[in-house]
Length: 249
Picture 1 (cartoon, rainbow, N blue to C red):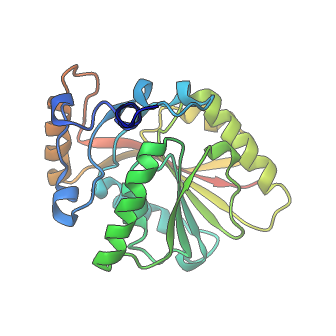
Picture 2: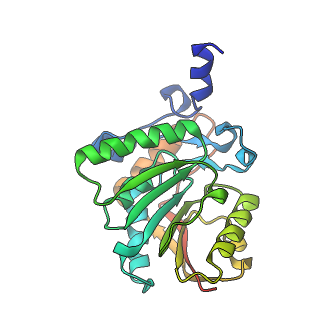
């Protein structure tokens, strides 16, 4: 295989200016690379779950921070310092970077696509160099369904990373892992298109369902990014539909 062929395999449609790529102010401020919109059909890794990938897009920082604050008011099972934060379908790691600004026990990102994984790991290096990480953080390459939850309380973050078949497998795996285990799992779910899958999964209780508004700056940025997409396949609103769930056994 030639070097050129390898480069072509690693290139994701949606990460070049010609594909409609537009930098988010978050990247401009901190010198990281979390912008871009990659449709699910272009996120090929060779894994059987590829066909269920939705898309890559970084969560609006204002939405993430507001949802975490709402979770903190939900009376979690422990203080934040005891929770492991897990970004399921971490992409380039924007949520991991944001979470690492908080005093979690650790912050983990799980990503299937190797190109996104490489970019995310570089972003973590930048974040550490900037002194913005308050906690250990790591990007794990692999399938979220096969990822084993760490010991102790966990907070999982999902920005609509995949379709219903994978979501069902993930929730089933978590339910088996948590059965009889003296720990807790809370879920932050942004762009919650598969809310009905969670509703049908025994053992989980919903704590919150509603809209989390973007800040004005994030709304302007996201509208601009979506408007620059050549195929206008995706749209942006001034809010995200979100929910918070808790494992109750």
